[in-house]
Structure formats: structure tokens, C-alpha cells
Image: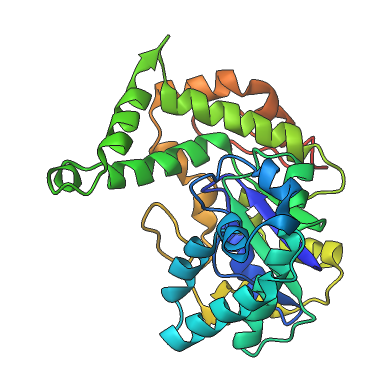
Length: 324
């Protein structure tokens, strides 16, 4: 399958990039992330090794069939969903590898929508850049990897914005938060040497992302801040790297061709690409948390051009040492 895999930590611009590529006729961009399964934090190594001997149901389960059905049901009529799933199931009989399953999903899905099947498929895998390149290639097959990078302080505060919306007292009283999830949340709030479990886990994952992807010369790498501040410059570079002609549609976020706003954790005003998202985290983050991130990720931040906070100055170095 000829495909581009967008990898990023959550809240780092991966969805925005997917929606910018969506409107270009050279691409078929999936409007979902389909690596959100129960085992999304683990590659199914054993099943990949014996994939050809799995039953059709086991192949669909390994490829996240239930998740795909749930996601596309929110976007399309029941008859379209039924056709996609049936065509995907039919193709699974002859799918000998997990990448072949995702290629089959691409044919079934975009075929049902009347899209050209020779277009480059865009998959988006937010949160999973903790996996090595070869692990994701075993899932999706070899392809171009595009990494969106964002200031870790901005990423953390955006993640916390979602956590606060999820773990409200009102939702807890209504029983909308599973006990196990609430218990894990409570444990992550505990401080060890002044650092919460959430913060330590985040810094570990961010460091892994930098080690595995940002230093890879064959990965298309860009900073979220550069994208929202100078979108045309960045998207022209991306178009060149991917070998497609420039189109103004690369500056308009869309989903399946329709205008679509990015999924910010915070209310923003202005255009669909929000330049203020580059550094408006500075007014939202607790100073102690900011300093902890700056200490824990000092090397990674320096390499990516993110400076320690200083009142009245930009937290962004241009250009980034690592990405120059």
C-alpha cells in the first residue's frame, strides 16, 4: 500500500496535518485513528507472526474491526458502513499479513465513497510514536512517516485540559467514569519527589518520541509551532517531500472534503489554523510544572529549539538545531 503514516503524540498537531492533506486529490485520508484498540499500547507480535493462519474474525479483531465500525458509524449512513465492513471481511480471506488487512480496509472504505483507489493513503496514529519504526511498519507496511512535534509544555497542558474535562465531579457522580479509570487517575495525581505520575509518564513518552523519530533523517519532521505560524511555508515543504504538486487546499483543514475545525483542548477565535496555539500555553501552565518539564526534557527541548520560559521573550528558537 502506498501510504503516509502521521505519527505524533496526542495534542501535537497530527490531526491538523491529516486534515490539511485531506483536501489534496493525491491523498485518501482516513478520518479516523484506527490504532485505538484495547491493546493500543502493545504491538500484537504473536498474531502478526501467525497472521496467515488466523480466522477471518481473528484478523478483523487484530486490525481493530470493532473500533473501525464504531468510528465510521459516526460519519456515514448504516448502508455505507455495512458495505465497507462486508467488503473488508470478504477481502480478509486472502489477507496474509496485517498490512494487507489495512490495505483491504482502504480499498473497501474509499471504494464505498467513490474515491480513486490509486491515491496515497493517509493514516494517522496519534499517541503511538512511542513505537519503533519497524514495529509500525509491521502493522501498516513500509511507507513515508510524517512526525509532528510540539513544545512539550504545550502538549502537557493540552492533555491536562482534556483530563480536567473528563474527570469532573459531575461526571463521577453520574457514574460516567469507570472505577478502574478513576483509580488510575487518582494514582497518577500522586506526587513523587514533587512530580506527578502523569508528568513523569508524559516526559518518558516524549523522550522516546524524540529518540525514535525526530532524529530519523528519513522521517518528514515538522514543528507544530512552525505549521500554525507559517502554514504555507511548511505545507509547501511537506508537498515537496511527498512529491505532490502544490494546491491551496493544503492550507484548509477538511475531513472527507468538508471544512473541519482542529480539535483544540481550548476555545480559540480566528481562522481554522490558530497561530496563537503556538505559545498561548504560557498563560495556562503552572510554573512548577513548567520548570519540571524544562528540567526533565532539557536535552530534547534544546535539540528541538524550545527555550526555557523567560517573561517577555519567545519560547521558540528559529530554526530548530535538530531539524535544520
